[in-house]
Image (cartoon, rainbow, N blue to C red; front, side, top):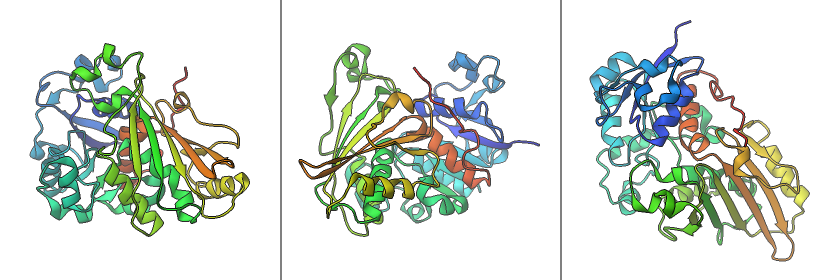
Length: 350
């Protein structure tokens, strides 16, 4: 059976690299166009020697061109920075293609909020209404019918999945929530910058963008939908001296007296049909190494009787679950495939 042809704009960043890795062995999708202005003319194996012998490595990188992509592909992934993706999306949608955008350009429903947090004018606000937020656990039905999917941010994925059951069941107060998140260095992208050099990241640990990280409005927007009321969250990111992974520790206040059994039952029931969300046994907490390179979101629950807090800890891989793997899951749904196609991955341990 012939495979479904797909394209990728932005093959040289970490998310583009991860998408190539996943598509190299996808059972039903074939990468037929990979684009980069800087690396056009090279083959993928020249950029990524690990593709040697995998077939996909012989594909030549080309300049991004909507007409060429529309003639060859049914769906295109956009792995380019915010601000650039919206223009490509408009062109590709106009050419009749389906689009999965890994940038932030279509995640926020209010263009004014987008512009205030990202400092960029939204040039295609008319597309925001048709964009579907790409969390498969919550929006699979809408993703199947979508032509444009806004792939969630990595931090928001870890926080939203962690809080959704408690908010949906009204277990916690909607104010005073603190999300303390730590990410590996690949979350900053592949661009050259002094703060991300090895000697600047290795053997240290730092907070950054406290109170002003751009994922904050995305987290608040999606949690508000689940809770049915406007929410404000204190989101506090940190940089870990590791390559990949996100660990989020989320502090909440229960609205009534609960037992750990009560909370654990709510979470396991909520995610009973979601094989990528693994609610760990009581007393266990997640680690980034146990989700590395996979779509899993591991989740641990702590009910702190002394402070009266319900603490939720989640772990995901920021590049797979937090970006490219999730984009591929959305593409699977948009193209009529099983959501797990090409994503049945075991963690890379150690």
